[in-house]
Image (cartoon, rainbow, N blue to C red):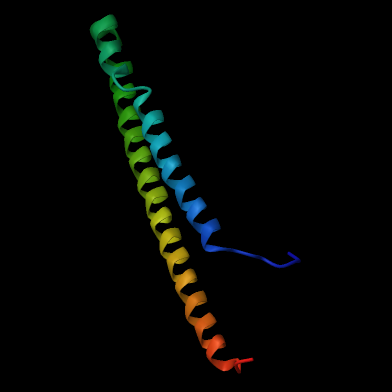
Length: 105
């Protein structure tokens, strides 16, 4: 990879926001199939009990995956916010140190 990589606190904060937004959308997607198992049981009865059980298991797995992905996205957002804050603090600190080294005009 060539070229300079430039990262600003604003870039990091924007990425954090995108991760939080992704976590919210995951919750919406996770809810899309909510109630499907109950609907199959109500509309098809015992004849589809194995299908209902499989659907319930799949829904549980989906719910778990959604929660884990949301937690990961929110965790990354928090770390990006922390990085942005530390980046800005370091920049301010080092800028002040450089200002101290420059003779007045």
